Length: 413
Image (cartoon, rainbow, N blue to C red; front, top):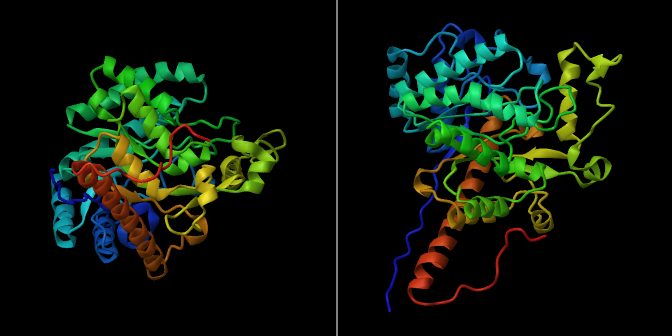
């Protein structure tokens, strides 16, 4: 009989800095752009996380989408109105060392296939600045969206991806970076009827896009930053998604996680189904899209009419909701990741993404215990999963002891 030691491997826990958009007030940060990064790293140290996902975005004065039109406003914690320099990098690196908090990756979430050539070029130029900043900071990856050309069909978007997005991945390859795609379909990004406005929204499209990337030698740059909230939005469950990737030979694609949930509203689902609210949202006026950004923001009813984001730990424990794929089964999420994906847990960040509207208080003192509770919840769930995995897949098999029960099964409803 052989004996295997009990050695659970935990994932590092972090937080996306958009959780507190204006930790550093604009009147202080605009003239001193790296102050916001320093103060967020210090806040992250107080929260006792291992890392942050550093949010970059076009400055509010330069963004093409007003804040009033966004369900979850972004944050330009990393201010790149001017290119990032080696001197700025040294300042941020000093703050990293002082805080003891690493930067897991940089996040810039925008529509990189925007139909307007001028807007697309502006976003591309900014993305290249994000790439350059990642290199100077020694960060291994950039996280973002692909987007969608609203003037073209989904199949035509594959060609647009090949022509316009692959060159971005070639720039990432030249810099030694991964591009990690978050799979949100972004249903309310426009006032049109399309639900899928980020074409990389599900495993079927990840694989189709990866095949294009492979043809151009950038397959190693194309990776997924998986967020289970979007799976819930589309009626999917994490275990089945991970099993599908494994079955198709793509279990290597996921290299990071957003720890954000979704709670489906059964009443809203009864009214609208998983397509979301399709009419009488208020984003159109007099037969045309409203020019008022606040009205345009009502397009998000396509999503918000049927569900609400969950900050991990804030939703009630609901076994029936887990089985119906109406809320994230966090324990099975972390177990399935270890059982089905090709990843190194110790190097796979769990990034808390706070988008639970009622709890998105933008006061540091009030937000701190909310984030602290969610971070602790995510950490302990992961540790429980790591312990179960080590016991069931290492310790017991070494002594030929069977594991009890069946567990959650993929593809089963």
